[in-house]
Length: 175
Image (cartoon, rainbow, N blue to C red):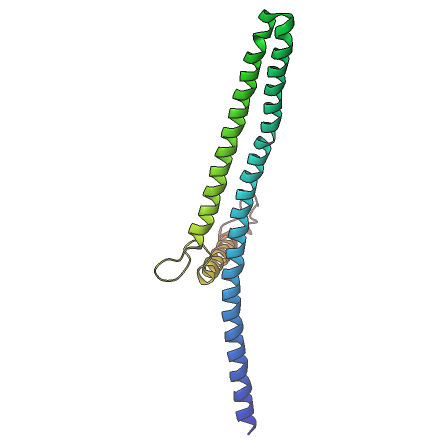
């Protein structure tokens, strides 16, 4: 009876360890997917903030254009020749507003591209696995290979150090 209890406990422990490893495998994939999505969302947010910054100038440039038109209407009564410069200033401010609008459109396109990248990376390939996300077994295998290479390198250096005759030491000869 004692051997059966030990066998049952060992089987239960093996099953629990298996299911824990399986859950951690799935959790590793999910954590990596969240990290990738957070990175892409941060890039999209950065572009959106740049667009908002460029767009903040649009009302100001429009107000300056309106001020130039109003100034031209006022100055035309005093000096028609001087009033002819204000529409040129207004068109300069309108051109500046067009540049700010173009920057907003570029930042919008970059934001859309970053969002599309997120959607693309989340797409499944025919085997049902996401191509861009981590594969825990492959990653652990690469980590183990790195550790083994480092251990081998250190061991080889120590062996060569022992086998190589020491340089700089004076060998004592006994006659």
